[in-house]
Amino acid sequence: MKLIYTVCTSNYLYQALTLGESIKKTNPEYEFIICLADKIPVLDFEIPYQLIPVESINFPALEDYSTKFITLELACALKPIFALHLLAINPALEKLIYLDTDIYLYGSLEGVEKNLDEHDIIITPHITKEIPLSERWNEKQYLNAGLYNAGFIAFKRTENTLKFLDWWQTHLNKYGYVDYCKGMFVDQLCLNFVPVFYDKVLIDYNPSLNIAYWNLQERQLTVKDGSYFVNDTNPLVFFHFSGYNPEKPKLVSKHLKLSSDKSQQALKQILQQYRISLIKNHFNYFKGMIPSYGIYVAPPKEKHIVGKLIEKSAWKVINYIENF
Image (cartoon, rainbow, N blue to C red; front, top):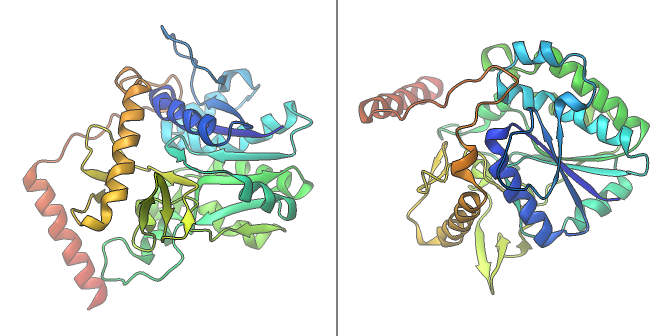
């Protein structure tokens, strides 16, 4: 049995459906399960994947989690809880892969599966090369956000893995908030300890895994004969569209503007294709849904041009102070 799961609230089901579509195309041997940090919404169309709402997994702390976490924090805190649930109800399941809903697969996960033969846990680093501190997005940001990205993690059923998942869920119960000043960033900062605390952990440096706005400075995307490659030689396995909004197609992410450089043609193409898939998978239907659990925070309003200029100037001042 091969299984991929994701965790989201109903307002991101358009992303989950798009992820599922990519799994069917590239890795059809995998079953895909959508774990909902929410109730199953009433729809006038069918979702072709199994949905597991959090209320169905006998999780006594749901009310407590729902009243103390915003919806993002809740979804992140439920990742290890759903993983333990899936392993418990599927005794034959030996390997399990978690993917964030805003990921799209372009290639086979065979390499990940083979690595799980020798390792219990696989994680990927946000960056693998130095970034000058003069850059707005530099190394110090990853000390706040975590060295590893929790949008992808692969497990093998072992005592070692079960100990990690139990530790992760316990840790997130207390520290699963977004609070940079207190050294918290949902589920990600915990992963810093995983290679230290647990055995058989693979930090996978394959540049074709988890390419996203945060590592585009070290990973060049190109297209050859209809297939995507990273740094010309590595076939793209999956792209993480973190912070992407189909209503703002000129942004790679809310954190990064799309460059007009001609070398970015493959990136522009992949963003355009992803946008079409999101809209086809009911973006306009799901985007306004309010989740049933967790503290709902409305999306921020678009900043006025003056506010944007002030913010840009503030970053320049911060960088100047830090460097000089």
